[in-house]
Image (cartoon, rainbow, N blue to C red; front, top):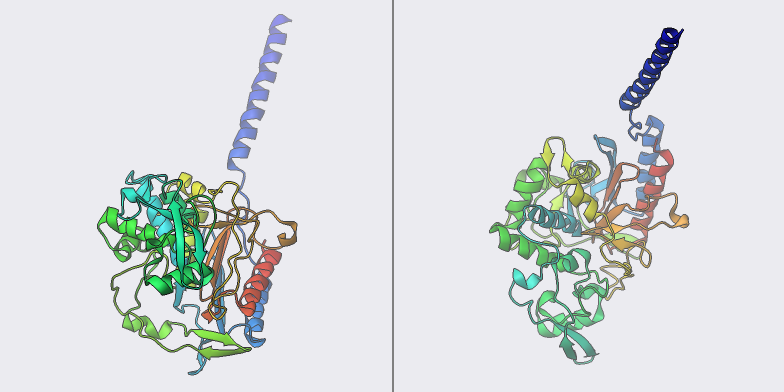
Length: 423
């Protein structure tokens, strides 16, 4: 009887272990969450939205792309690459992405951080001369551009540059900087600061200084460093500070939106070969497909296929609030032909290391998820990376002013439709 009970107990025990193991195996091999996708009908709706934006006069031409971690989910275009010559917009169009260069420079800085060649809270003066006796403006006379200053309360650090809390701003977003650059003919970073580093968010050329640091530490140009450490590994074959002659027919024409009409900007020569100086805050050319690969790298925690650009911990750090209790402030404009007040999310959003971070706001529940990363270029190129939904979106136009009503409507209508149809 005792043997029977022992055998029975043992059998129950074995059965229990088998169930637990089976459950564990089932959990291990259970399929992961289905990758995001769009139905054919959804893709058609997104394409109609782009065509509709062109049809109602919101933009002369546009390319839009949505990526997941494993590839392109949607790619579409509408309108003209060149209105005067009646050239249709191809998805392979090359755009001047302006300040969408900034996240690339930020990634370059993080590669040096991972290599132990810098620390994020290092003072800028450790790497560049002229940043060791910073002054902050206390009184400014706009009539004659005279001012009074005091010593800065703290050094400017690499983190301040990455988060746009350095105290430097652009002339087109700040009247003081506008008057000072006109009066002194100095570079922004050579002028007294608008505020103590770390005290306020001002959009500006902080990333220019980051680019200078990359070149100082590596002994390479930004073009060379970007190509070797970012673009070539990711397969971004159309991204550079120059456009080879064989590709220049794909470069989108730039337009000014004036009184409801699109006026072609004067055509300037496009550099056929990379020529220094290179700026960390602007001036790359790229395509939606190339920038999609850059976004995919972030969605995959710093790698894309065999190419590892950053560690997962660095990607996580870049997407976290790095400005504490400060918020991204609405940036006014001193030149309405160049830009309207921006960005979306001002007064609520935070900033990471090179990216604006979307806040949680019920009125924007139909758009990108809280925690999404984004930035833009002055010719109305825009992107966002949504880690929660595992997608990234990029939209490229070539229109001034920045934050033109039609361009923002095109972006937001597309974005809302993306989330309505994402499966």
